[in-house]
Image (cartoon, rainbow, N blue to C red; front, side, top):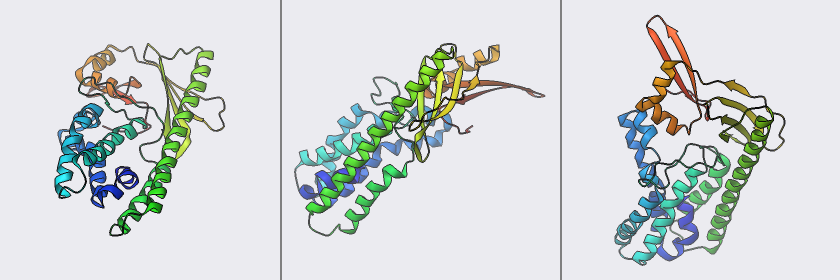
Length: 286
């Protein structure tokens, strides 16, 4: 995405180095993945945190612009390089918001996580058109600025943005249909999400939670919706579950999962295990 933005709006002004600056700025927010060395709990808390903040990245853009201006031997202006840096920095977290993971757009002022469930974290239908632009731009990196290349890159950027908008529309429709059905069945949700599935924009994993913490989960096609068969997950009233959820890690997990947490109590010879599951994703982690 960063390289495509550079190709569309800046390469003809700043030269081929704009591609590399756009690429590096587009990758920069994910440097927070170094927190993985501190363990999975630290990753839940800090990934997509301050390095994905629109506030922090806006303050960093002039610095990146100054460094790029010096690297380019003062070709173009510092303001142009800062403009490129700002766009390619902030579009990374804005794209992340289109997934379901959750992004702290306004850290450190607030740790609220934003997600609109438009597309899956991995979606070739979104990535491949931008990859075509990048490969073409690198292949023709020594060629003079090309109006045709800019137009193609602009079209690809527009098409992929429309794709995100379609995904958001499908999520909104699927969540609305699911909430209506749940209320008719007597389940009063406090929150409903229509999480995109991998490689299928229209197939949505519905998760709903009520004020008591009970969860309903099911699948719906946003293209051709039918009545949803919901799996039922009742929040255990076991005192150990309450202790687990009230613990610092339990609170962290509830925050990360946006409250869509199911609980399970397993008793065995060595004691009792309380299992917390993030129902937004049908995946298993530690």
